[in-house]
Amino acid sequence: MTDASINSIVISGASRGLGAALARRFAAPGTRLLLTARSAAALEAVAQECRARGASVTTAPRDITDAPGIAAALAAFEATGPVDLVIANAGTSAGTAPDGTPEDAAAAARQVAVNLIGAINLIGPLLPGMRARGAGRIGLIASVAGFRGLPDFPAYCASKAGLIAWGQGLRAAEGPRGLRVTIITPGFFESAMGERFHGPRLFLLTQDQAADRVHHALRTGRPSAAFPWPLALTLRLLALLPPRLGDWASRRMRFRVSPER
Image (cartoon, rainbow, N blue to C red; front, side):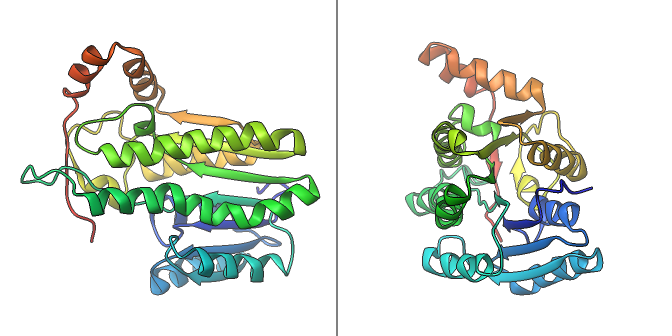
């Protein structure tokens, strides 16, 4: 059941994977959803599933880096009622290619633009309304990769570390105003993005297991949720090691990343 105080929800990256799974979990009679992602066709397919569950669904096919387009879609949706929960889930990844070529500057910049700036593009326009009401929930889908920079996808780690830090600052600033900020840091789970990572995907979860944990954390308004805990703890401890030892240990965790399609 959806929390009675969560009736109007915005989800980015909702056309597939975790975003689509969360949309289906929140969809229920009386719930309003705004789903955004780049693919109009895939987004509409998820929207139809959610409508079949009784939800009212609006779609906004946008790239999350299109700040004016995202802001316009949010304004139109918010004009019909306040947003109770916004989930910044849109993300992209890159890294060392299968042939050993390191990620280039363009790929690095794209990850920061989507994973960090994209979240700000989504949440920023909704903050004034939430502050005025003294209520609202914000979910940030980061990653355990944000706990420590890793050699084969440094920009991905940086983008998620930035998202964690931004979320922590936002949570500290907005908590006294009545807003709840939940920072989610998942490890590996079954997804199209995860399948592009070639290497040891430790403590791999199913997509449903990951979505259930995220859904529960958002509904209960937890300040943070990291899973699976053995991987989260390992990376947190790795970040505490002296630099040379930490760098040596991080080189034991090597990956190759296929290009995004």
